[in-house]
Length: 161
Image 1 (cartoon, rainbow, N blue to C red):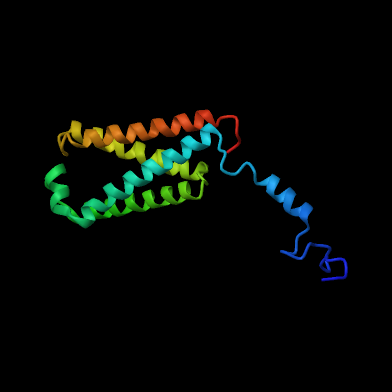
Image 2 (cartoon, helix red, strand yellow):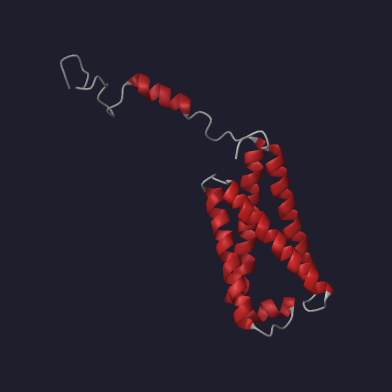
């Protein structure tokens, strides 16, 4: 501290920054916590799909007998567990993006693409009678998630991705 109570760099000595700098920084970050409606919807979509994917992806890894009791007997347990693991990882990535409030185009593409593919597989293979009709419930959830993403993207349309 110098005689006038200021630090060598002209600060008030508390944190090395002048009061003006701190005020400008505080004003700059005032927008944090206030999100545009589209942004909130995208974070909600990432949270919902991330949670759903983690739970449904881990289920066959954690307890295959209960998974098969609901979805039907599986011929290739290793394949079910592999797909479950991949789905859980996608869910984890989406939850991380939501937590950081960084739901960008890459996360949206991953989410929409994976949900659409899984819904398509569900519908096609239920129609071919290869998998249980209970998978149509999963397809409905997946399509609902795609709709939520679409609503978030429409609401944020004016904002550059």
